[in-house]
Image (cartoon, rainbow, N blue to C red; front, side, top):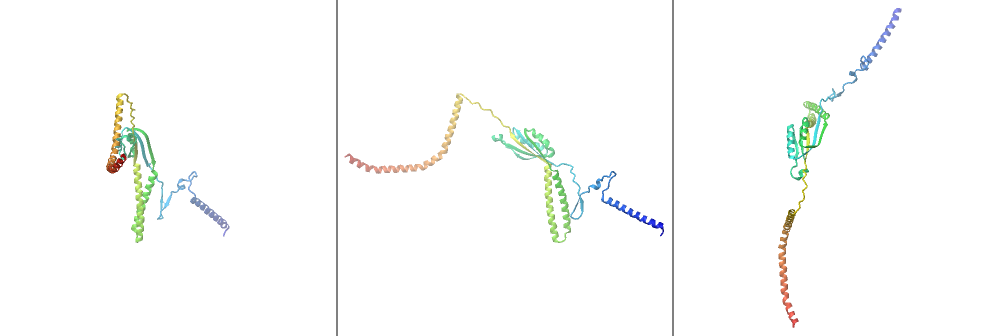
Length: 309
């Protein structure tokens, strides 16, 4: 081997070794670190990986956040009105409910008599949610508003949760129905049918919750309390003079006569009963007394004559 060969061969081997080390270092950097932009910052594509969840079958299903476009709001209102006539007010409330596409769900009206001035009447209307403000304006025109309350409840998250659970449960029911067609033995069929029945029951319950929430969002109840206007009567002026005294005396006589006849009518049955029982007793006592008097008369006469002699 020549001197040139002995000199160049070690240099070539050293260059090859240095090239391999540089390539492996660059590869490890590319595999272990996220890609950087021109300014040296990490890009978002590698910083936040998508969230995934593993299913029972071993597959991976990506889960994306649920975006809610509209709000689901439950609204209700309460009003108290002072009206001169609760029957007329109730009639107008029924017309208002019908005019706004709603109905009267509860009606408890107290009318007539002295108690109507102190009692309250309650009427509950149910109107579409978009008609609530208009219905309240019309109701306020019936009488004097003494109380008005509007309550709102945001059930957007609850509605979204129920909808998501319904979707998941329907998919679960579909999978169980598919497994039922593949079941071979009787034990497998019974187990799958039991699971399928439980999932169908849960699905029906969720559907009922979804329907109830939808109705509460779509319809707004209005509770209207009606109170009667108190009529203040003027204080009567006392009458004086002869005719006033005659009128007062005649009224007193009528009151006394009515009271006397009332007492007499109350005691009359007892007096009749006492007469029926006491008359025979009185007759027997009187007869016995008379008999004793006659028996004692002859014995007393001789003794009297002897004394005279």
